[in-house]
Image (spheres, rainbow, N blue to C red):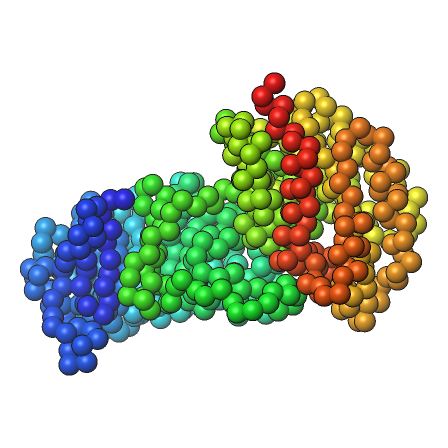
Length: 528
């Protein structure tokens, strides 16, 4: 970690946390007021140790100095060579006037980011996004967003400016002016959420770039006291704080929610080593998040094809429809739990490799899924492939003769691709929730009434028959699920709205797969 710059809002100071752990004041002054809780605010330019601020928030550290969003003074300050000066806006005057730096007015500026050409972008809370050109002109970007903007960040290596407002996130291409909107928790009740797996974006507040060419962004969520990572392909992962799903997912979790390690996370930054720092405002501390892997879990075809071989990893690729990834974060998915369960396997550790489980995002429908699978198998760097098969791949409905021959043909072609790539594999045959028991699908049974118990009575034997002569191991989870459902007390294996597994179900299915892999020990091939 290098030096970390902090806008200490209640202390009315800009602080530096040095590499050696010492905290020093770069600029700001004032005494603690009678409450003993914060420093009285003010405004004063001049020597840094005499300057006054009023709840500073955003910071942009550049070669020319440190730019500060002096939020309640409604201006941008510049700290350079030990002196604080007013860079833009009229301090103490709230407004929305464009013009020169000395004439324009701002309204509660918050997060800042500077482009390579010297343009400074400002999240101006009551005026959306303002742009300050290198020549000193302030203008308002004509963006289709709410004026109440809390954060923004430039994605390095792209033309994207990402903006957080009360409606969610807006990705804006500065070159073409094209936009993409991802709605917040509140806005998603009006607009369908585009995040893969139907997950909620939450309520983004502050943003930080991932630093790897627009692959994703980090953001704080004040509503759920969490820090999250959103990929360019639309997948979201929690880095800190408890995952809180909407009640319709029917996870069936028991006991108290996980206690959040954050309270009011606001500012966020990433260093050159990839570590993330969060202003945990409610706890009056800076939290460092490190040793995480944002590349793990769900990947598209292009992502998998671009992966480089890592000799320290034993890569397992999961291919399946949305049963594998819907309503799950990567670390809480079947693949995420499988990876954790294999970490302690002695026979795998003896190969010198660590397990890495990747899940390919595919369509439902056997033709499209198998076609993507064959493309990835032929061109990616993986060691073992798990192929899920369930009735959803075949459209779920009768008659069986409409899909069983197509299913066999497509899977046979996939196995041929596996043989050509010298890859070991295993099929995982998993029941739909209605096939398991009507109690796992009360919502659909009682309200939609689209299927009956008899519709699925023969799915299992057909799936097994079409796979048995392909010469690959098959893990049949039908008997395991039936045995579990016959128990006296159950935690639901599936969500209450559709066929996707609950949080407990994801652990359950991962455990069964891990047990079978530990018996097969396909990684022993590495030692021959």
